[in-house]
Length: 240
Image 1 (cartoon, one colour):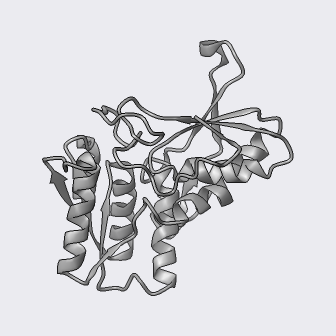
Image 2: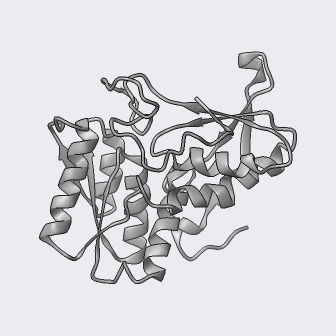
């Protein structure tokens, strides 16, 4: 039985569901939500917070601020509550109501953007608000999941090797594309693996991630109205 001293130390990510009976082909679903934050975003949140603590960016008096459609916000709320930080999550009307309730129950402030920016839509407006808070108060620390290398490196170090260990004959890996941290971490790992693996990015209609026209999106956390800075499309292992 595992014994932990902090909630982020528990993360059961070695569960796969065989869905061949549904799709008719050999296909497995990797379950990443069995942790106290309820999603794979706990990995990136922990990586970015601990890196900021190590380099001195994050201090006891700091106030974390981050733009999130829900899952990363919940993960950061849990970490902030555990470590004693204040946290402001900047979201918009598409934020899952249950995620907002969890964040607020953990003591976080959730600021909801009501109007999209002329350039960049709701995400652009969220980032504008974050930058304004940073300029107004130097206690704020923005981990910036959209550019933080820890967002992809944790998946290069943990997620991809776990998949490779469980499926040594892997042919195709499907990954949802939001900030593209999971996507790029896995793509870079399997690019150098012992066999060729096709990486298929799953985007949503209305997303501008891969150069298509921006429009309404109904699924929080999938797709974006601003091209993700972490995305490196020339990666030979990446297909979309």
